[in-house]
Image (cartoon, rainbow, N blue to C red; front, side, top):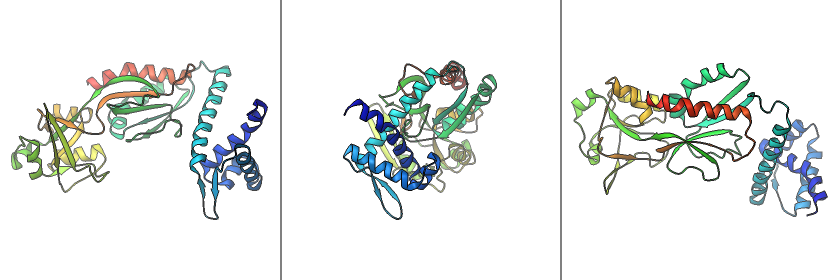
Length: 307
């Protein structure tokens, strides 16, 4: 495709991004300051130029075709690159100012990042933080995330990786519960106990443990299942049963004697353990606001995790 045709197509590609994100010609047209019919003609022109169907239009909703989704992802990358051009040329690019959107697992956000947020904002009054709880894999480009924290043994290879530390899963119960119900000495013993699990998926009640070369998977049951770590911990503290937590969630409770570790000689296997990965998009021109945030957490997090 000739470069002049490509340049002429740029505004149409930008308009297409907005239509997909808004899921509506009317809403996208309002943001662009044009009529829905004019925007529809723009998309039709783009489809003709690309020789591909981007959208399926019905009276009830707007559907993105498979080809349209692939083109949308490339368009998002294009806009991100354009934003970097603007950032580079902006005279205050080197100032630590502007918004930062951060995604992290709920437990990590609540127990580890939360104590660092207010001191950071006080230190950098021109920065605005937007925090999102995200326990699963997240597309930082599609979701406009600047920095993502993941608890994993498989970080995203397409992103820059800063290793903040490591985390493991810990099995805990209250001393009172164990006194009444007995202390498990093998993972299979958990089948005779009340267990608190996440209840996010159909397999969350299957707990797996590793010891040397022995891998044991156990189906557990219990009267209380919740995917909020502090609510689950409160249930364990109050004798409702045995639960699995990240070490940073229960560290204080163990030190205070509110809960005790169970089956400490077994390694608890799960989706959210391994390194604490701080990840962000690869670029030579990282905005100052993101740089100072990364530098701040890389300095403060090891101290926070140690306490």
